Length: 88
Length: 533
Image (tube, rainbow over all chains, first blue to last red; front, side, top):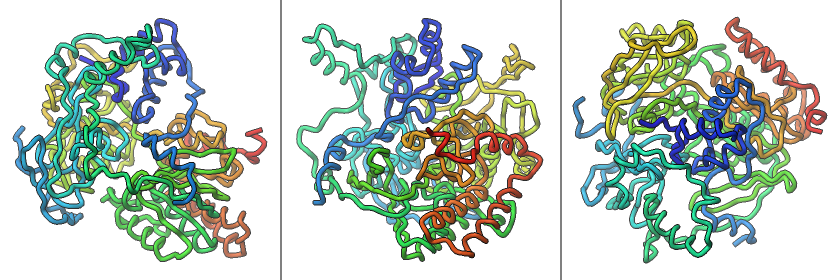
């Protein structure tokens, strides 16, 4: 039975807790080690859930969030390159 | 639970569903009845289809979820094109839809019992380099992400794809909800050139789904049903010639150095916008809840349920379980009752009686729906759809009390535990962010004019989780501030600003919002430029 935190990459609560226990106890490394917040939705629900788990495990209040970069929604790469071209 | 042939609602006390022409679509070769103006996912749901795809790693069943093209749960093959988000794809006659099957599907039950390492793209099969390509090919087969069509299907022509160039405007509003629309009305009456964008196919934001009446001051938007208020605001905006509305357009990036926002329009077209002032009114995302099987088809956010019920007129199930006692949960529970759907109960871990307004709680209690506090869900039951849920009582320290578990009969679970402000577009402006529990999550520090950077304003739920009526007032104020700073200010503007500022103060003046007022004061500064330095 699994408790899913990140639906896009099937990251479970257990995965995140294990990673925190292994020493990856900040958001940026946790993101890289488990893949949480890096899926299709870019962490729209799982970022806050992950922060809650971190807060609970470390008993601190999270102040920092992850770095957000454009594009914030999944878009076809082709259209991003055509954005550079002049008016058709 | 009995399975219906057609889950559509044909009679509703408040809403009238205008369905288009009847068409036929095919799921894996089986013909299904659908109507124009329905999305593929809604049409499939109405026909009782619950499992749309399988998840990437454990091949867990996934179905209808966010309904707004944000998650990956509904990706299917449509007319030969893989990975189409069916919840935003409109139905066409004769459409052929296929589930993306993989040969890993038959071992899914075993996969589910195993604990696989996280998907680490950066290190997965990268060494030695020679195995990377063949290993990736095999991995892709396992993930169920579809395969690229051998021949490009006719429907997938890319003639529309491309750039629509660059435009400049005075005021760009991101988000067509109550806040964005109100800002457009006030600014549009005074400025020459205002652009409002929304990622849905119509303006109105979440108002289109609200069938209940708002309350606060009748002068400002209250006393009307939500969707009526939305219609009114949209009508007022469309009357203004200076306001240009771009629907089906989402903001995907903002580049502070160039002061340019990149928009993604219909048919994958891009548009660059340079604006003097920006308003971010992107609203909020729903909070998730972690429990066993929380991704089973049938576990929905309150927004997904509202979309099904009030936009497409489709029953999400026969009997629902509601989690949370905030206003969202109470209102959606009432919407379910309106549509003639049983509600098994409203459960919440909070110790206080209800977190939402008493009026909403009383409305559903009058229908005999129990509101159970100090309870939480531990597990959703069922194999590929929800068939029940197990709830448990909580002790003083929010720990489950063993032996207090009980099974609740239901065929869908609605998670309405609250909202988090949408932080992502705001962060691209490089503001100072704070994590405030009272305001709902990550929000930027703003000044008295709701500016969070030199040229960007914030209004509505993405600044603090409040009522739609508050969003209307904030939006109107931002519209006026922008008009003033662009040099269109006069006595009328100053008088109106004073009036709305007073109304906003009164709106937040209730004794229930003392915490919110304090948090708002703490995160409001006199001069935003100094904070950002």
